[in-house]
Every structure is written in C-alpha cells, then in structure tokens.
Image 1 (cartoon, rainbow, N blue to C red):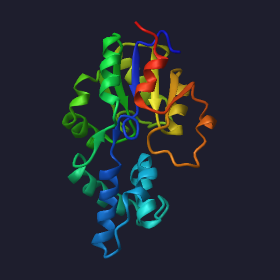
Image 2: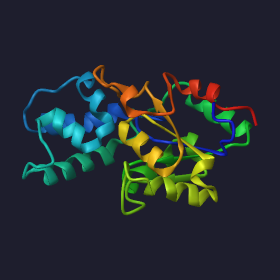
Image 3: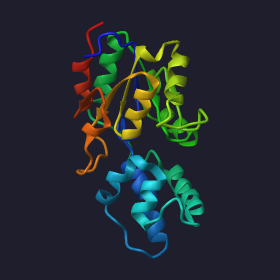
Image 4: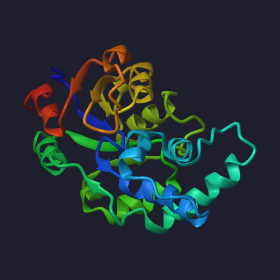
Amino acid sequence: MFPNVRAVLFDLDGTLIDSAPDLGAAADKMRTDRGMPSLPLERYRPMAGAGARGMLGEAFGLTPEHPDFVAMREEFFANYEARMTQNTHVFGGVPELIQQILARNIVWGVVTNKAARFTEPLTREIPLFATASTVVSGDTTPHPKPHPAPLWEAAARLGLSAADCLYVGDDERDILAGRAAGMGTVAATYGYLGAEVEVCRWRADAEINSPLGLLQLLAMA
C-alpha cells in the first residue's frame, strides 16, 4: 500500500496508451516502401516500448550503431508523426483509474521518454490528458529515463517532493528512474512486455497486471 501518495506519475506508451499499432505501422511502411513484405503487428508490439530503436530493430535488424540508423530513424519519425493518433488508444480501465485517482484528491501526470515533438500533439488529441497536471517529455530535461531528472522535474512542477509521488511504468528503465528519484514504484505488466521479461528483477515496490489494479495500492484519501 502507498497511503500518503499525493501524485501518481505514469509512463505513457505501454502504460496509459497502446501506441503499438501506429508505431508498428510507421516502421512497416518503411519496409513496404522498399518492396519488402509487411510484418504483422504481433512482431512489433513487444518492442513498442523501445520506440524507434525497437521498431527499426524489428523491421530491419538495425541497431543504433549502424551508419544508416540516424537517417532511418528520421524517416520513421516522419512516418509516425503523420499517423500517430490513427490507431493509438487508451488502455481499457485507464479512464476509470484516472477518474478514481482524481476522486481521491490525488493529482496525476505523465513522464515519458517520447520527445515533446510527439508527446505534446498526442496528449492534446486524446481527451484523457485534459486532467493531467503535468506532462514531461524525453527531451524536457537534459537526461531521459532511467535518469531520475524527468521525475524530479515533474515533482517540482507539481510543487511536491519525490517522496509524495508514485511512478508507474512498463519498462525496467521506469522503475530504475523511480527508485533513483526516491519515489514509490509500480511495474505495469499489461503493456508491451515479452514473455521472457522477469519483472521481479526490476525490484519495483509493487506490480499490477491491469490499470485498475493500482487502486488496490492507494489508500483512500
């Protein structure tokens, strides 16, 4: 239980929204534009949390060390920017979760490694985020997660200490960042985790297998 939480901060992709369909489609268009066969969404989904690195790795076996990676990443970004809200949707249970958090007089926000170039239009487009008290992107601070700087930035914007905040994410870097920031941490196991991921090794304070599972961890205000 987290009885004294005043703010809940969430990762974005794989925690609040399912953006895998649009991320995968952006990478797959690069394949079909080159005359390569399309890959099914199921191939892309487990890597969606890794953004361009994950999508290009799945689509082309490309790593960041490859000399073509930067150019290919920009092409991927352009494809994604053109379609990033076409098939992206909020995970089931998330709207109810946010409603319950607000009803308990707890504020909420987003801390993502997604660049503001994408985060800002995406969160403007999806009604859920109208009640978010802060949105911190991957390039808001000099260091993205797993560095704690973005989480400290979010807490500062809310006028709270890190100890007042809980961070929920679906990737090990989220838990590492939350722990380093001095926040309580919750691993969301319903996102893009592959079967081989051992979440227990992340050493999160708690795990949830659905968004509404978080409510069981929050004491009533």
